[in-house]
Amino acid sequence: MFSLVIPVFNEEGLIDELLSRCVSSIESFTDNYEIIIVDDGSTDSSLVLALAWRDRNPGIKVLALSKNFGHQAAFTAGLEHARGEIIGMMDGDLQDPPEILPEMYRKLTADGYDIVSGKKTGRRGSKSRNFSAWLFHLLFRHIGEIKDMENSGNYSVMNRKALEALLSMREKVRYLPGLRTYIGFRQGYVGFVRDDRFRGEPKMSIRKLTVLASDAIFSFSRFPIRFCLVLGILGVLVFLAAGIYVLIAKISGFAVPGWSSTLLSIYFIGSIQLIFLGILGEYVYRGYKETQNRPIYIVREYFGGPEDK
Image (cartoon, rainbow, N blue to C red; front, top):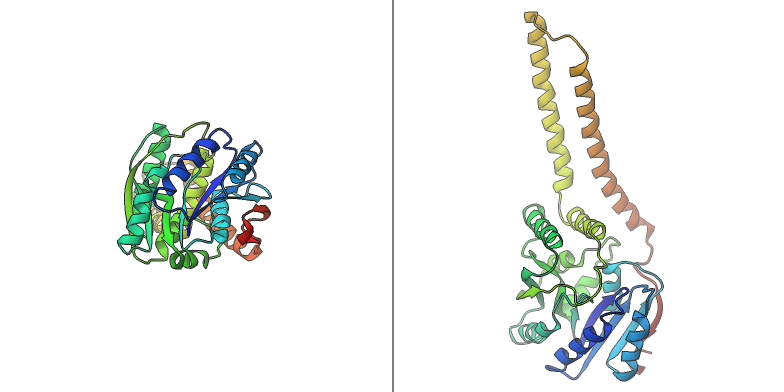
């Protein structure tokens, strides 16, 4: 069986187009499938429309969460309910074209890969959002501790062995593309041009994208804490040089009177300390989230088939 997990949040304007294209694409390579729509606390008619599709097609199942738990949590919920031996995950905004699913499936089954990810070779849509994505991948390529995931997002297909390894990692602050790369196995890629949204406004705002990017950096890079160390050493060197200058100025008798240098020193040291506290606070917060041990998501109701009961 092939399982496809798609989280949606207030996507009533594209549910019909999304499922129509997904069903058509999947049925081109298998008739044994399930599409799990994860309703991440939608407040519009997304759930109603998804259930209407379920009534017409027994291969479509709907997992309704009790509230909006976030993109990565919704993916996790769907993956944990997937029954297939081959499992795909795809965003619900149709920026990931379902039409390349047959090629991803073929590459996984015929070429011996455990994971096949969609790699973006180009982007349509908002130039500012595309620039932000390009900037993140550029930064992560240089400071991240996992490689070969540049321009790869959630869109992927994997076998059951890889999925079980992915789900074995239970951290609460999750960045699934990074975790998927971290687990290893034999990984391949299929290139595609990422489309603009089919309809509606992006549900991942710049703020949410920034939070997701910070989750990736703090989870898979030591750069922030090393930045503190480098900045601290730089501060020591600067003030060592300044101290030598002041000492020479005093001895030579041309010291500049006034408090400007003192105030500047205080502000500089205070700024460095605030940066340190902010970065350390991010690590403390993530550690605190893990120790709370709250569930990643809560299911309100699962509208599956008879085999799921």
